[in-house]
Amino acid sequence: TLLVRTEIGLVASLTRIVVLFAAAMVAGSQAFSSCPPASASDGLRKASEMFSSETQAFVCLPSSKTFLDNWEQTELGKFASDEQLKDFWTSQQESIRKRFSESGWQLNVKFEDLTSICSGQAAMGWIARPAVTEKPFSLGVIIDILGNESQVDELLARIGKEMEDLKAESNKIPLGDLQVPHYRMPTSAADIRPKESFYVVYAGQLFAADDLVTIEEFVQAQKNAPAESLSNSRLYQQVHARIIRDRHEAELEFFVRPLGFGRLLRSVSGKNP
Image (cartoon, rainbow, N blue to C red; front, top):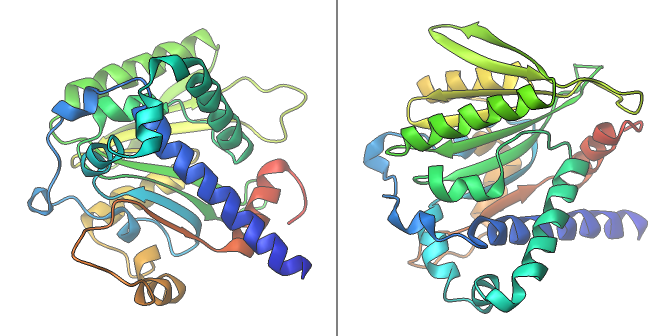
């Protein structure tokens, strides 16, 4: 019974994060309505084909514009745009940031940034790295940005300035023909491991992660879809095979391995898995 409750609790927790994540994207901003959506002809690979098969939790808006257009018609979407509820929504956004921070989030891409830079899908995932003792997990983000490159340049410049203000060490790491901005935050006695972040724009997508190996995987996956991807994993395919679909495209996708995600979150907190 305890095991079942634990699994249900983890799934419910992630579900709440998904809903609030989506809500935060549109709260207080309608800038996305002018962004052209990406299409299959743009040649951008699906995020599920780029994340490792070791991904324990995955959240994706396959077409952010479609989601946001329909979101405005929902009751929750109407609440998000109600000026009288602005303070409440701000508090909810802070709650989301705290939840993500507790889940290992240390990237400077904010929820509200998505409305100005995203042209199609936006996805994030927690990846298990059991072979890496000092940090057995990764957090990665993939955002389609076609047509919004200037806004992304502004975002990366802002991140650089924020890191400078926080006295973070910064450098650029060569990755093939790319230069990957890398930031390392000053550590404190309370930190159980260094806080690092990496960002790179490649082939119409923005990649962000808390380690270089995830950035490398995304770049390589954009070039050639890996055989060991999340979309090719047996469990992911089994789950998708059970989904009853209609004529509408999916607007929100999430996938979680409850026990694996639970072990990963314990690693994030510094506890034994």
